[in-house]
Length: 134
Image (tube, helix red, strand yellow):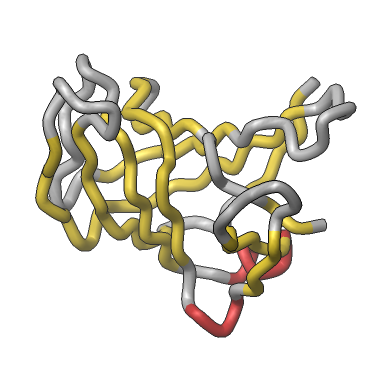
């Protein structure tokens, strides 16, 4: 099963941070897939690739009330994925503990459709877990 992070949400330390607009793991664990009806190619990730990666890089569109993450921030991260299939009744979440190893700059403007974004890299401190929710 391939996992598409487009439209996922990020919660850190129990507070909503924003929407995932970019996600990366080491290049040797990525495969690309053409999505029918879309003009671009999305990167999708296998469950196995996510389970062995020890570092994730996110680009997040920050919620207006959220504070940007800082280098050294540590705790539990939860990525709630959109339903992967249109007829699906389950929603997957990806939960792990880690710390922000690389803090990216905050960019953008709240007055635009892109909003304010931040890219950052999280180093895992425990094995990640994928949980299926109803």
